[in-house]
Image (tube, rainbow, N blue to C red):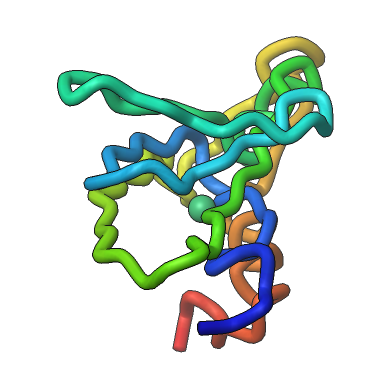
Length: 121
Ligand SMILES: [Fe+2]
């Protein structure tokens, strides 16, 4: 047992959209910076936005930061996660301003910011 507040610290996923279904509570989101616990019914999942969508929307659609709480007692918990990612080599213009975007470079920079190797390796 750790005294850490989170099992997974606050972050955003760096994709377009993330779909999550967990076997129990523990996920928290930070809409407008305010922490909110996610409580889902058995037949619900949560969908949240990532920074590629923020970039594509010229900042109009904010990404959703999220984290996983560290429970007071050890419990079994698993999550099924699906990341929606565009074709990173396609020349998408941004939705509002029509700016040319290099999504491969943007996504790769984010990927490497966590200490990962570049996509090409
Ligand atoms: Fe995440």
